[in-house]
Image 1 (cartoon, helix red, strand yellow):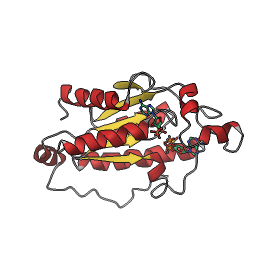
Image 2: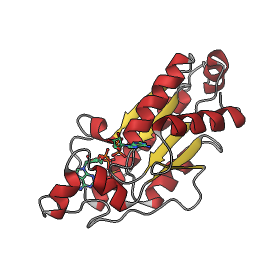
Image 3: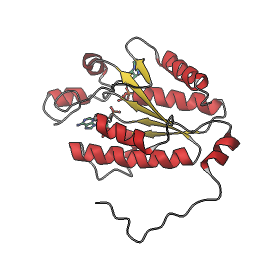
Amino acid sequence: MTQTNNIVWHDSVVAKQDRVQQNNHQSPVLWFTGLSGSGKSTITVELEKALFEKGIRSYRLDGDNIRHGLNNNLGFSPEDRKENIRRIGEVAKLLNDAGLITLTAFISPYREDRDNVRNLLANGDFIEVYVKCSLEGCEARDPKGLYQKARAGEIKGFTGIDAPYEEPEKPELVIDTEDNSVEEAVAEILDFLKDQQYI
Ligand SMILES: Nc1ncnc2c1ncn2[C@@H]1O[C@H](COP(=O)(O)OS(=O)(=O)O)[C@@H](OP(=O)(O)O)[C@H]1O
Ligand SMILES: Nc1ncnc2c1ncn2[C@@H]1O[C@H](COP(=O)(O)OP(=O)(O)O)[C@@H](O)[C@H]1O
């Protein structure tokens, strides 16, 4: 339930645009979405490193990490996944206002939840990156052994097995991790950010 009675917004004197100008780069949210094992964490870790080395301020929000803290009361029901993405969307919006480039790595399986985050941000500040890898490919990698557990019935409601993943319809970027190396993926994203004058 939304509770905003008797609460009044208090503006800063330093605006987002001032921070963006000082940093000398824009502060988009790069929203990585894809199946477990598709490569979201691997790519965002390397991208964060590459941005850092260029003096570009960014911060990574990752599903596994956030679920240890901020969202440690949420599971994997559709309602909990929705709330997970809603909270991350709000955090990403704060980082956007803080002038940082945000890299999020969440399965975020529902199109509507991703679109809600898009709608929280100004035009152009939400960059949906579909990390594409077939279920067979992800299952063959199975970096955490979770697909094996899901197939054995030890995890219920696992994305791609017995819970849905809704592919993005019009993502800004598609990174196929069966056809591209991690280095190629990072280079492609950096090129996009330069071409579109985010950095
Ligand atoms: N049931 C089920 N389905 C999918 N994933 C599961 C599940 N249970 C645990 N895990 C582990 O949790 C990570 C996904 O968390 P997310 O916060 O990204 O999920 S979601 O966006 O809310 O759907 C996911 O991490 P990634 O592999 O990095 O995607 C898994 O390690
Ligand atoms: N091109 C690639 N891009 C990203 N990861 C890859 C690629 N090729 C193989 N991998 C491997 O696939 C796995 C992806 O796991 P991870 O990054 O944790 O995915 P996710 O965060 O989407 O669950 C890692 O073991 C990684 O080394």
